[in-house]
Image 1 (tube, rainbow, N blue to C red):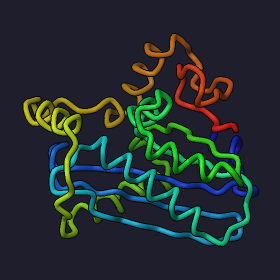
Image 2 (image 1 turned 120 degrees about the vertical axis):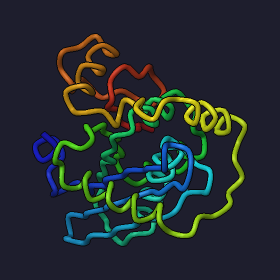
Image 3 (image 1 turned 135 degrees about the vertical axis):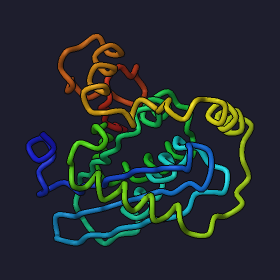
Image 4 (image 1 turned 45 degrees about the vertical axis):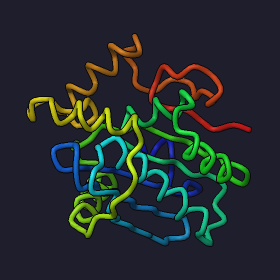
Length: 208
């Protein structure tokens, strides 16, 4: 599906992932960027001593956007491929202004798409980003300031049983069931939607 919808020429592929120990500490962001010119860039960075999976996923997308912005690739189209549905929904709901600003800057010169992909189902780029996130989590962690909202997320995550996982870290068939329930659709792919509109499926295009 990815290769058909976003062929390597003319699309830049940016796979992102984030993780944190028990979803509350030692976060890591992983990024794999491939350009049509044949260049591949990777990053595995620590995201904070106190960090949720969600915050690490957001940081991964931020890092990918920065890498693409600073790259020499002249490719006019870029797709971010992320298994972090919660982060994509928050972005579409204007809850991540810093990330939105970063993507808007990128969208001045390129078509920008954010595409949800299921985790741990054998997509090579996603698996690589996952490994890079784990490597980043093992680096020395910065003592970043934690927002009040993030503190609440960390407390809730710490109080949950460890067997309770975020939806985007479930098995693929479980994710598909949740996705169909959320969207009311049996098909994953629907028409792209602008960030300014409602967000009912895990695909949207930034248009300005």
